[in-house]
Image: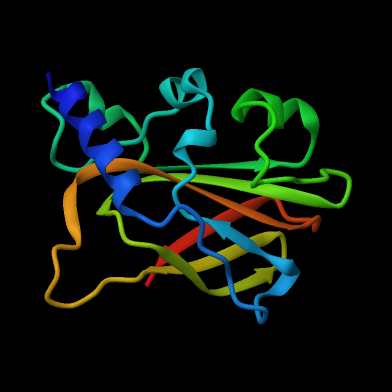
Length: 164
């Protein structure tokens, strides 16, 4: 029943949110953020990669899941494991671009934007913020959200996401 409720909340979040959020021209590496990309992620991949959904799991095993998961996609093999075929909005040439898939637990369905990015050695740090509107109902029950970043192909071995 809780899974059905969570699915309902997730679907409501998708309907209420803006699907695509572009980033400003000032971001490095021609980065674009797709802020609610759950419909592009294969169901089997979603099932295999759960995150801890804060406070709303009655399953003790939920504590074994990480709070976030990050995947770096730079070739077709990895792309095919994660994404449904032929996503017109994504349109990525993996010989020139790469994708970062970030999934995490959140209770906000509002659009997100990248506020800052920087590469320090082999670690890429992405700072983002959720565009909350004071005095409105911004929050829902926590759910697993999926971000996709499309950017120029660069060399790094890990990515840190920081919510501001």
